[in-house]
Amino acid sequence: MKTDISTLKQEHKQIMERLQQHRLALMAGEIGQAAEILANLREEQEAHMALEETELLPRLNSDARWAEKVYLAEHRKLRQLLDRNLSELNSLPVQIHNKVLVLDLLERGILFKHVLEHHFEREEMALFMEIHP
Ligand SMILES: [Fe+2]
Ligand SMILES: [Fe+2]
Image 1 (cartoon, rainbow, N blue to C red):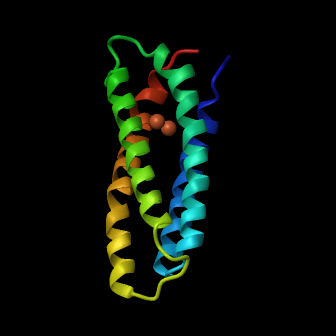
Image 2: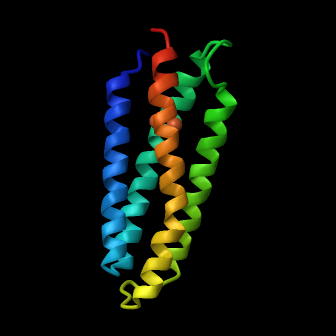
């Protein structure tokens, strides 16, 4: 199967846009909505990563800039962070008005955002360029 790199890049954009929607919902104290968006993002992320893991990573050469294990470790980290954030949200009321808690939740989510941005950057500058048809 030939993997369409432009589709994968498009998915990166969609995932970042969904994360932005999630953060906006959090900012508004709409925890139920924020959790629902994050659960959808989780589904998209799983499908995206599964494709990379089955179609792309096995085709990485030994002289690749970053080895397969680097990408796999980041996938693991992203799954872990997302699941942690999602279960925190699921333990809260669907709507909150406590601004301090809202700020705290946004801060707790920032590590996932940073790892995700960094990971997409790495894939677009290396993995996606190093895959041979
Ligand atoms: Fe990835
Ligand atoms: Fe990706």
